[in-house]
Image (cartoon, rainbow, N blue to C red; front, side):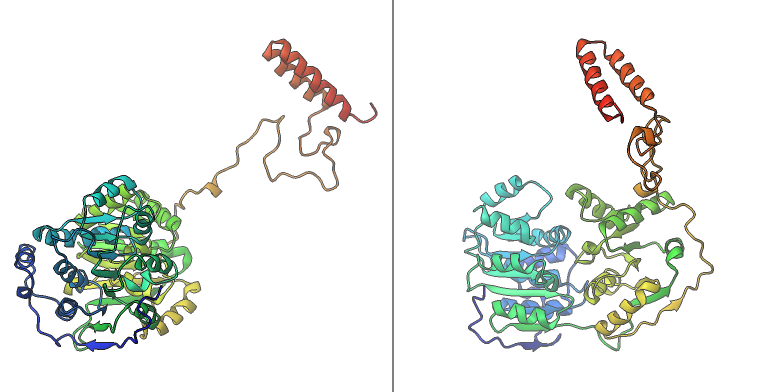
Length: 476
């Protein structure tokens, strides 16, 4: 789907101070609502991106996490909507349900102030309420690709009136997992739409893919001032695999008043680690893909409010989750890519606050860490563990593999794993896998079972069992 590929895209660079901008230049209703939120001055990404989008340019926006990207596209897309026009006029696609909800929390007050209707579309819940909301004619849609495509295929969603199309976290949205759905959704939108992509990282392959669907996009790149002190302190510790949990416990014991976000790699591993921390007395919950939507929302609400100070999460939480008071990020397990590492670390040190990111490396991680440093373009040398000797975890977590096999009675089959002597047969006379039961004992057990049944049907079963037993006896 390359509706704009016939045009030769040219990328222009816009610096942080290229165009002076203030919120007084937007609709009075938006300006008033921003004042209610306590937002008075635009951030660098907003200073550059909002005027470019208001002027109708397609845009590639790159800025550090926590820099105000959401308002940078929310304000222009609301400005583009007209209450007199029926139909969806602005569409935002995001990779996760949590990010969709977070963007809606920012956009909905502004939309309501302009008498515009907004609808969320994401999986993990029934389609029916969303279908009802779509019938009421929203002007703005914020959704995940899979659920948005479901409504398009069912005819519940029409995108023929879209004026502004935004991809947030563009690097992940255009990665192999999301690209096919994104391409299909783009096919439902007009070729005259305005397209904007925002992300903390913007690899070259993302630009090349994105420009197929963009017209001479403006590039807005906001980088931290090199002379400014680093907001996020990054530390890497070498630890043994058998004392890694003890190292995590020490870090959690030394945590401050802010929230702590601990990253694992897999859903199972995150759940297991959170369970272990709860057993050890730490107020912890897990955020991973197998949770129901209600459970995920409750976990995030408790974490944002500070009721839950420690969250163990998969990479889903690294994508756009905006919790301003995360003081410490711990990479308990290494991420798969440098981009994911950047997003994980970016959960702390947001909006000018100081933060710390600690990565725990075991021996198997060193090669991967070396390659990741090359991709990051910086070197963070691992340090020896500084907080004294670490003990091994004294209480390993129970697992299905650690359960003892159920013991059978002396006359039954031995537990799985007991084997016959090599060369032995399964004949009851040879003491094989069926146990050392003698034929008479087996017949007696059958007779007892039949007597308990106490019916003619039971006697027939006994006769058949006797006949089968006699056929198996050698020499008869």
